[in-house]
Image (cartoon, rainbow, N blue to C red; front, side):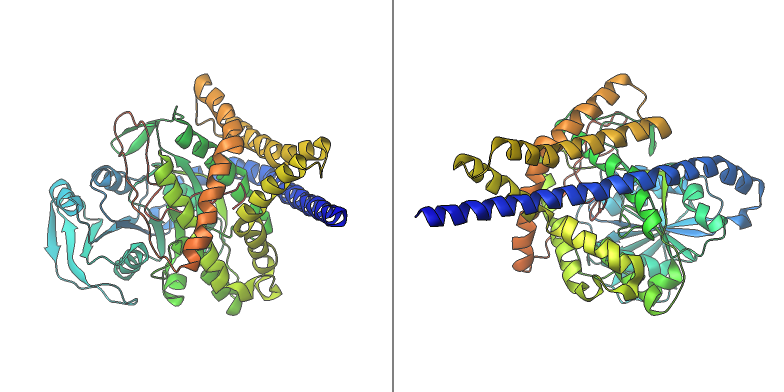
Length: 493
């Protein structure tokens, strides 16, 4: 019996030590990303005014024409304001292709009434097969608006239908509940204006909950007083501001948010558009796009631009948050399994050797490791198998690093963009940085673990994402986008 107890004790101590090393390594990687993000962020802040001012002095031909793709399903609460914001962006050459994906609410009726839509002949080629398009509509008020009314086929299918109807060489995929800053298209085009051969561009996404929104524009950025959306403000700041900025130095981002991402149309057609049936179609698309570029020896970049801003609703209840995080993780697992041959494959350069292994070890298996760490540490303490000093070190690394990284992201935002002007909002952010690491994250660990079970069972469900909608004084939000891939679960994704 003593021998068995000794073996069990040694096993727990070794496992705890391995998990502690895992945490230290993972957080060290986040620190490296943060260090790499600072000079890149400074470079973009320096370039921003200079490049954008120079572009304004040039003719409109300097800007690449962009088609904005908007999939919409049961978006009656926000659809009119969202479309108005897209149509009135400060950009000389863009169109909006909105796809009503078989909505069962009044989405289509609101669009017809608000934009005076009339049906036009279906004179559009079909490059990618989709669910049937029932009708095409143009607006008498806005010539740049095209609306497709189609049978329900899911978000990916709707985006593919919009790609078929797009006229321009660059495509901006957004969610219907996304509010885009007026100059976002000018800023997201910066790499193209600077002469880069761009395959895709990702940009910053922020939380709209509690912000004042008028006529489809965020006029006053606020931090929600409710802890669930408030913690997500911290998540998004950490994920986009230094997480994704840091990835620029490692060959570009492994994930481009489905709520705001610019793509070159010829490459989208080459890979067959979005994969229907994938619940994280944005992540899957980027993996397939990168593989296509490497396989065909095409030198194209996928940079992240920190200053174009888009705003989206995030879950404001645990029930909706659980559905979102479970789906995100289930989609991550499915995509990683489907592309497992690319993991640690030097054929795909930094993406195969760094990004995919990180997503596998630091993202996909992170909730499993975290749960084991908590359980083994508590068992070790209960049975006297580990000392309090080791347990304290474990929990300091598990919780403390997250709090520090979140606070650094808040400070970085305050020093660079200063989106939150009130001292009260800033104080709330620092408070949420603590709650997000001690409480909120542990809940998402459980939600993400459920993703393994649902993936094993072959679930393809999206779950219902109820929204509160955009009003003059926004007090929350619940969807995070019908398929919006937010910051993923940790800072660097």
